Image (cartoon, rainbow, N blue to C red; front, side, top):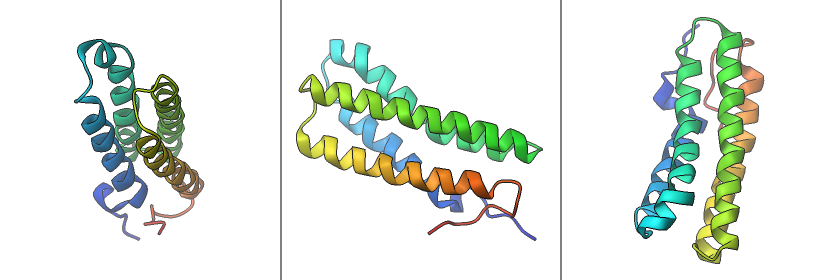
Length: 126
């Protein structure tokens, strides 16, 4: 049995892209917005992939699963910051809908990935 390299796991690829998307959105905000919502939003979005990576590198599957639970928490935190930015009219309806859709798809993929940990090698869950 061989394991997929981390970069080939679909949910990891997806959340890496979301982190970049959030960065591109926040980088254009003014100082106050970056310093309040922006930093939190970027950190939570980047934390999703960071936790998946850290879990992937752990020795035992239970540790991997736990870090994926942390990733899921960061994903939900990212949804919260997205909703706050939208409610406060910092981002448009279109940007809000696009990022929310990506986060929602990743949420489902992450749940599927978590279910596979410890049962079989990580799969590209397309």
